[in-house]
Image (cartoon, rainbow, N blue to C red):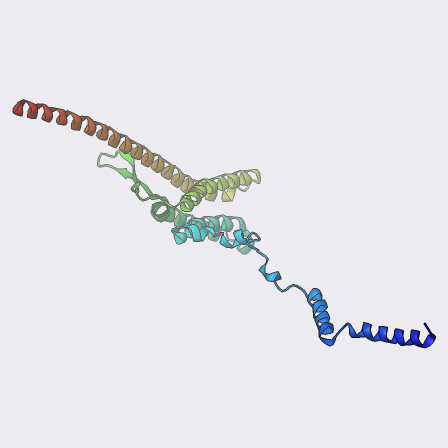
Length: 246
């Protein structure tokens, strides 16, 4: 092959190589490169059901409570009485003012717990009754077993009944160790109010459970007696009818 023919063959080969890639194919190749380099658009479809979904469904105590207002005031007066006892020295130097304020809060708490909180939250009431002859005794009332108390209300109620007397006992020991004798009467009064409600509602709860258990046992006995009586009446009736028509 001569030099001219080699040059002509090389030129044809270059034109064939360049001609193998058309304009449409070149655009398609660019689109293919762009599609491989483009970021995925379905990142937002990654399931996030297990990421923090439990936190959104959790409800607060106030939302789970059947009577949030009564539950709020159960803790409000008690916490405020303890906070006033601990911090009154920072706001007022008057012993009389601090004492009166704490006593008022304790009285409000005692009345609220005895007349509202126990009846609404757990369905219990108690009071001390004195007869004409001077005999004193406790009277307990309870809600019907067909109307059970809310689980959150009952739990928070009994926590308050036992936690706050324990807190006042702790403050009593702290006052004794610090020789803070002037404020010990306030602590003693708080213990009297809190322990009275705690003991009263504890006995009321035991009385209600005892009455419910007695009622269930009585119903079971009556049911058994009813079954036996029914069988006896049925056997007597069948015997009488057999003698009459036999």
